[in-house]
Image (cartoon, rainbow, N blue to C red; front, top):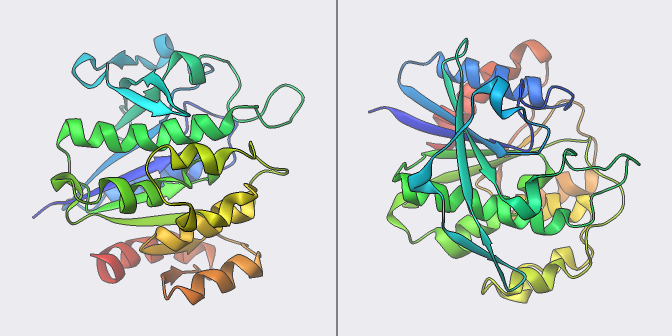
Length: 268
């Protein structure tokens, strides 16, 4: 039976060509897809800098129109899709006029965090899971890349796990040293509580910095991948306390082979 792997990333080449992890995501998807028993799809945010005409994005009307409540306000979900022909990969984009029309991705022209990144992150992570429900596409593994996906493991395990689409789904988070400085909106924890999640489950992010978001992602993930040169010892130690499956590729040439082994042996 064919395995389904969903790769969720805050950036994907060629749509965000300047992102530091964008090209590695595309290469990973290509490698995993070489296995004929695997179906791979990708999700990313539809930033305003994504050229819809050049990349031939089109809205999937049957998947759009659902409202996601963020900070007690209904925000319409818009789902778009495109393909990367040379890789034969389908990419879904989570869009919303309030959060993703601006040209910047996650930092502004002054190289500082965009003020509502916390709500954009909430909307994106919920939007991925809502879209999968509407598609009826059940991933065996969801593989998250980048701090912007940090809430996805929490939402999957606390809000969506009883939905039939996610009955057998396991979730991996890849953690990168290159993240962000400073903190997101300090009210993030209260905004997440609007979703019905208990405060004790998210106490880690009372200070919503990148380290604490990584720790939260690790706490609710079935597996963690420390990407090359990851050096944050406090997060490594925190992950080990939860007995989470861990992959640390030791050599660059073993990188993608390690992924495939991790997918096939440790988690499925």
